[in-house]
Length: 171
Image (cartoon, rainbow, N blue to C red; front, side, top):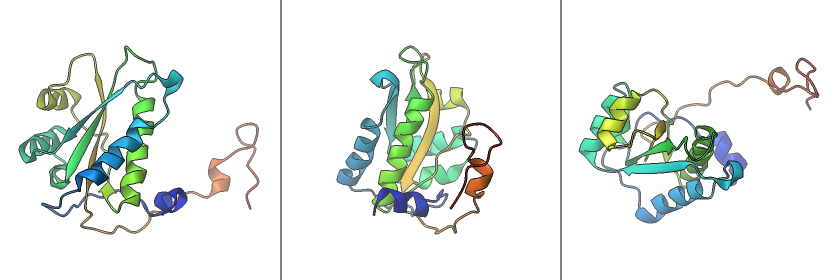
C-alpha cells in the first residue's frame, strides 16, 4: 500500500479484537517509523512508552477518561514531549505518532489517537517524570470494526492562495 492509499483508508478504530497480538517485527516497524520522523532542529524531544501489560492498559484506559476500548488494543503507545529539549515538544511527537499511524495502517492494524486524558493520572499509571508532558496515547491493534469514511470539507473551502480568503483554484 502506498502512503496516499494508507491516508485514504485509515480510520479511527475504537474496537479491537481482544487477545489479538501484533508480531514483534511489525511492532518494531511501527516504532521505527516514529524514530525516523522529522523534528525541529533534529532535537527529537520525544519519548514513547509501549504498554503491553493488560492491567496497565486497563488503568491507562481509565486515566484516558474511561475510554475502555483502549485496553483492548494489542499495545498502547504513549507519546511524551520534553519541553527542556525543544519548544516544539508537542508538535514534534505528533509527527512521529502520525508516522506510526500510517505504518500501522499499511500493516493492517487500527489506531485511534487519544487526546482526552487526565495527564496527572496517566503520569501516575506509567511513572512518567514531572518534567515530561503527555502528548497523546495511541492504541494499536487488530480492528474489530470497519468504519465508513467520514465526510471531509472540499478543497476549495480549506485552501487559500497567497492570502486568507483568496480561494485556491481547485481542479
